[in-house]
Length: 146
Ligand SMILES: [Zn+2]
Ligand SMILES: [Zn+2]
Image (tube, rainbow, N blue to C red; front, side):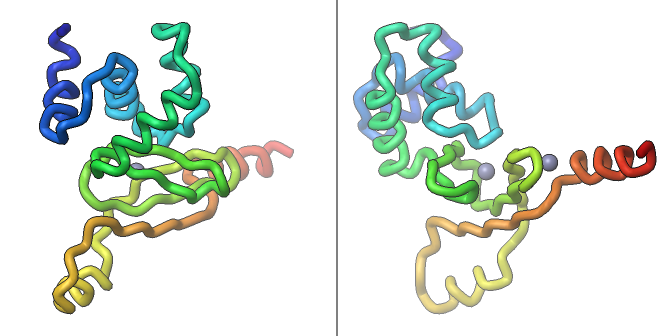
């Protein structure tokens, strides 16, 4: 196995998940693209390398990775799932204008209360929506010029 996949081979091994080339590529893609892609985007990217790959295989692989808590899915933008490799608990901000999803690292004030109740928190989903900084700047420029 090529060394660039070493990290991902280990992740799959640690979770006793059967190692397949598409699974490794899904992990690599999510690790390199923190843009919260949907199935379609991941599928389109992997298709170049795996021409016989089906959407169903990509979707099923994502489900396996999710079940093992290696990745998480978001429904912030509507009905389609967006995927994210887990890098600790974080919240998300969706720009209603450009559709980009940003990671927001904030400590949830309700966290301590939840943990104090004896619960073990595995997931915190905070969805914020609005207009991102870039889009606000663009809008301002547009107004100033027009
Ligand atoms: Zn934006
Ligand atoms: Zn995220």
